[in-house]
Image (cartoon, rainbow, N blue to C red):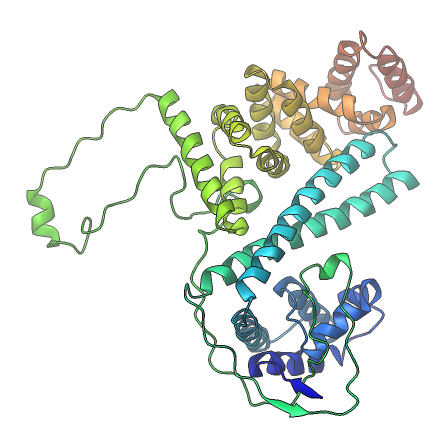
Amino acid sequence: MTVHHLPEEVEAFARHLGRLVAVLDEGGGWYGVFRQRDPDGMRACLDGAEVPPWDVVESLLQDLAAVRGGTLPESEAVRVRHLHAAAAAAHDRRPGGREALRERLALMVREQAGAVRRGEELVALLGTVPEGSPDAERLAHDLAWVRDDHARATARIEELGARLAALPETPAPAPRERSRTAAGAKPRKRPRGARYAWLEDVDEDALPDAAPEPDPVPHLPPTAAAPRGARFGGGPGQGGPGQGPGQAPGQGPGHGGPERERQQPKPQQPYENPDDAARRAAHDTVTALLRLRAEGRGGEAHVLLCEAAAWPAARLPLLAAELHRAGLAPDWATLLWEAASLPPERLVDLSGALTAAGRDQDARQLLRQGVARPTAETAAAVLALDEAGRPEEAQALVDAFVRSRTAEDAARLAAYAPYRLVPHLLSAARALAATSPSHERDLVHALRVAGLSGA
């Protein structure tokens, strides 16, 4: 029968990937994880039937670095990156490539939202078991995998969005393919598994074959500004929604020369009410999110949400209302997930703003996720808020901790500074007495067992 071979770029990448994994431990590292969870999917990638997402390749490069003593030449990583980009571009240029990318992107958006929901469930469960117990270790292990799934889904959303943006608007010529007659070729199974959800139906007649090195890598246009949100440390980047428009074309340095700039009067910026500015920022952000979602650019949408998580706390309730009105409630859940990694004082500010706006459930969820961090970090945050003259915020953080964690965890928290933290803990437990009378009793008992004063 006639066998249609893969694009040359895909074959070249598959060969290089095969040489890379040949030196890896099949039962260890990420390679072992991928092989164990979906051997058919991994084989499809090595055969060239599919191009794996970059996050999978990056994990394999980490394994390779470990084999070589913890370091990997930069030239090796760059070469693999170029081969992967060329293979992905050739793969996407096939007939039906755009539709396949959109389907995968929609799937990854669902995977990302599912990981957020599962993470919230695990965070809540962690608050019901003693810290350091077997159940806590099991839940922490599961949460680590959920966070990995979320990170991979987010990376794939961004990658797929960039690949979609790189496709020409008009149908491109089919990739260079060769055919020959092969007798007795075995059909390939369709790879399955959660980590290989990007795989589409595999051509059963597709087999790798020798090919020259790929053409130069096609240029991929940038898809978004550098992340600047809660998880990215607020680094510099392009102006986002709510930050005001940039200079119009033909203005600024390089257009008309310095002499012309000196002669022209500077236009006075009109005054804008802070409330109006906040509403405009929320509206602009939702408009941008709707456009990005409609265009399948989920990676850029996620970056926008990360940036919004770092906004002034007073603006976020307005954004929450706009998102829900626009049918983007899952995006609000994602934003809360990202905001949970804010510094504790910012976390408390945001929780207070949500409560003041009548979004009590969101405020509790945010704090519950925020205090899932290690007990030592929460203790340090409470003490820092106290020292900064913000006792109300410190108490709010302790209230969330007592509400979400066990009495034994609260005793561990108190151990970092008993004379300062025990009063906060007892106050939090007493505040819960109306709905949960056992909180104070259990806390007092745990403090006494731990030998801490103030109980």
